[in-house]
Image 1 (cartoon, rainbow, N blue to C red):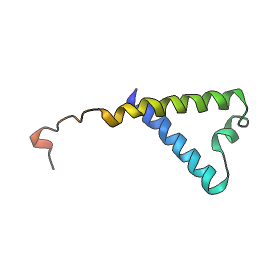
Image 2: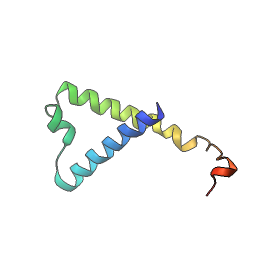
Image 3: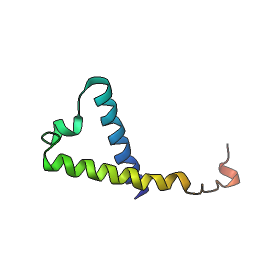
Length: 70
């Protein structure tokens, strides 16, 4: 679930970058406009992934075994 959320957050970040730089909404372009049901569903899923990803900020880091340490 964490990996899927991260992928969706990256998609959202790229989309916001395109909007900011070029005024181009890739999600809306691919799925029929901002008001299209499919676009709204995807925006909602990406938003939920962002909220889920907040938990990653507080997750403990797994310890790397000594033989894998850099």
